[in-house]
Each structure stands twice: as structure tokens, then as C-alpha cells.
Length: 192
Ligand SMILES: Nc1nc2c(c(=O)[nH]1)N(C=O)[C@@H](CNc1ccc(C(=O)N[C@@H](CCC(=O)O)C(=O)O)cc1)CN2
Ligand SMILES: Nc1ncnc2c1ncn2[C@@H]1O[C@H](COP(=O)(O)OP(=O)(O)OP(=O)(O)O)[C@@H](O)[C@H]1O
Image (cartoon, rainbow, N blue to C red; front, side, top):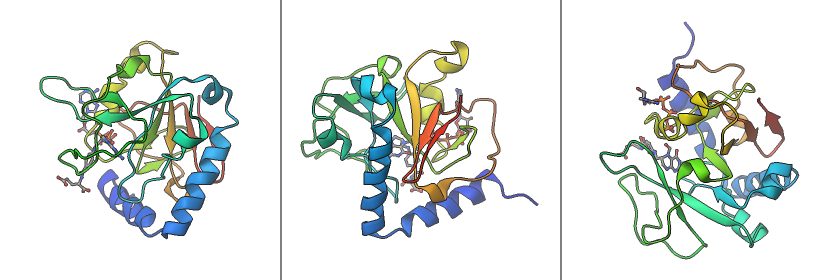
């Protein structure tokens, strides 16, 4: 029987957690160097990133690499809103942590998800077609649902991952929002 989403999620999460701190740093740095070559990255001014957890690729050094750009972290939805918020982060310490223990810049200015130029999307697994498996709450799918209704609309979604998170083909559901690209420490995948 083929592996289902839940089994795959646990296997991939265990894999990324096993990377050493040294490998983590190396992968983050290599992926950022590759990102540097993407014209849309050079042009982007307002960029969504994330605070890494559970072995996720660390893209925070982007703040030092691109001191003139604005970076934003996801804020968990507050009822009745179904969407992630994005608030600006300039690298300063973040004392507040959300219910998943992820820091949030609660007092910073917001920018609506749909008018960010580019979003680096955390993920558990991806495939070369741009299918994404996340933590299982559907936050990113709901937040960027409009991309399915308005093809070609922004922001550009770039999955950020370790190469070991790549699988041949992921099972997909009709609410899954595909990634436009994926960046790992080894290469860039162009998916659409
Ligand atoms: N770095 C990062 N930030 C992110 C996400 C992400 O995937 N990565 N998210 C992407 O959507 C949102 C948070 N989504 C999450 C969804 C589920 C769990 C989760 O299941 N966590 C625990 C169990 C639950 C708990 O502790 O209460 C776990 O690790 O198993 C965590 C975060 C917003 N911020
Ligand atoms: N656009 C949507 N409208 C309604 N429900 C949705 C939508 N997108 C996702 N969901 C719900 O979210 C749940 C989780 O979806 P899925 O397993 O694809 O999450 P994920 O992409 O792995 O998680 P995340 O984006 O939080 O990292 C699904 O059970 C689905 O019902």
C-alpha cells in the first residue's frame, strides 16, 4: 500500500530534524545563494518568510543579505479570519510566541498576504511539480486560495526545503495550492 499523507509527514519531519546544526547552516546559506539568482527575488520588495521550527530550512539570513527589502512573518489566524496574517520583521528579538511556540512580531505593521511580492513557504515535503505537504492545518492553502481563482495572481510562492524533503509524487487534494518554485540547498525547481 502506498504511504499516506500522515505517514509521509512523520517520516519527512524526522528526516529534517536529524540534520546537524552545521548542515542546517550550510543548507540555508546555499539555498539563499540560489535564490539570489532568481529575477523575481531581485525585484521583490515585500517578502514573506518564516521562523524555522522542527528542522525547517532556515532562511532568516536573507535579512542580512538583502538589507533594503522588507520581510514579514506569518501570524496565526484569529477567528473569524481563516487567513494567515503577515507582519513586518526587521530581525529584532520576538518575545511573543504563538500556540505552536513560534515567535510572532505582534506589534509590527501588517501587510495583506495577497499583496506581498513573494512568499517563501515552509513545507514538510514537496514534489518537482510544486505539490506541497505542510503541517496539516491548511493555513497556507487557505491564505493563498485566490491564486487558484485568479491564475497568474501574486504573490509568487517559493517553497523552501532541504533536498531530502523532495519526493517523486505527492498525493494532492483539490484545495492544495501549488508552489510556483521550490528552492533547496542543491537546486531551484521551476514548477509552473
Ligand atoms: N515555521 C513555520 N511557521 C509557520 C508554519 C509552518 O509550517 N512553519 N505554518 C504553516 O501552516 C503555520 C503554523 N502551522 C502549524 C500547524 C501545525 C503545527 C503542529 O501540528 N504542531 C505540533 C502539534 C500541535 C501542538 O503543539 O499543539 C507538532 O509539532 O506536531 C504547527 C504549526 C504558520 N507558521
Ligand atoms: N481552501 C480551503 N478551504 C477550506 N478548507 C481548507 C482549505 N484548504 C485547506 N483546507 C483544510 O485544511 C486541512 C489541512 O489541509 P492539508 O493537509 O493540505 O494542510 P497543509 O497544506 O499540509 O498545512 P499547512 O498549510 O498548514 O502547512 C484539510 O483537511 C482541509 O479540509
